[in-house]
Image 1 (spheres, rainbow, N blue to C red):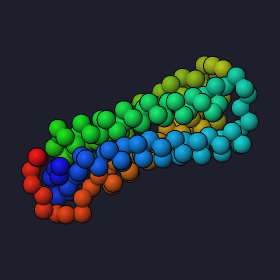
Image 2: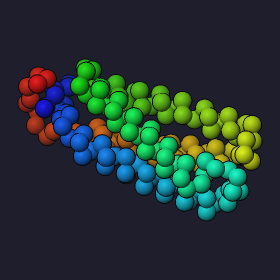
Image 3: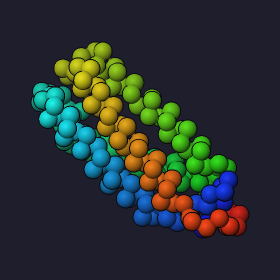
Image 4: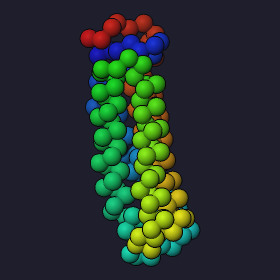
Length: 148
């Protein structure tokens, strides 16, 4: 189902494989950042946001939502990619607020380096989502029909 958007053609059907691939790749990126952060920071065991399971669960849930939102934008919005990138950037910035709050309150022994590690994990997931969803659903053809 090709959809034409400002000289770009998107194929919504590709989300069947691009969506799960985006979730899995985001998990890998987040875990890579986590491994580096844990190696550098040596967080205490009570700081659960840098444990193994919470980042995986958060990434699965939130990236799945990002895929669904992207699908809705492709289906219903004009200039879908541009609008999705703007919304994704805003959501990324908003996702930093709980990390800032954790660092300021020292909840679970949090420090600013821990907060920056969490923010880096958010950036990793954001980058994977925006790049994969916008590039892997794009068709190479420049001539497509209107929404089918």
